[in-house]
Amino acid sequence: MKTWNPLTPDRYRPLESNLTDTKPLIIDTEANPQDTLECAVQRLRASADLLKTLYCLSFKQADVEDIPHITHALYLLTQDGCDLLQVAQQQMLNWKAPA
Image (tube, one colour):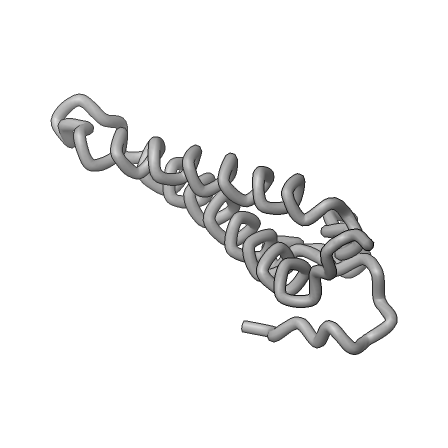
């Protein structure tokens, strides 16, 4: 896992879940920290809800092809949520109260 260096001049940080060379999905490291945190919470809640569904699912009812689809969605939601949390944490550590 790559660690984010807040001292680099890059405003936009690519999501780790990008699987392409051009990294089209990014996080604006200068966005409002509250908005960044809310985005992270949304993704992690969705991931937790999906995981709960998977946990409660009877494998007798499920199609064997559903499991990879669910785990892929869980990976994307969880990884993006963690990336967003890391940026929000860094933003809040460097946060200065308005004068």
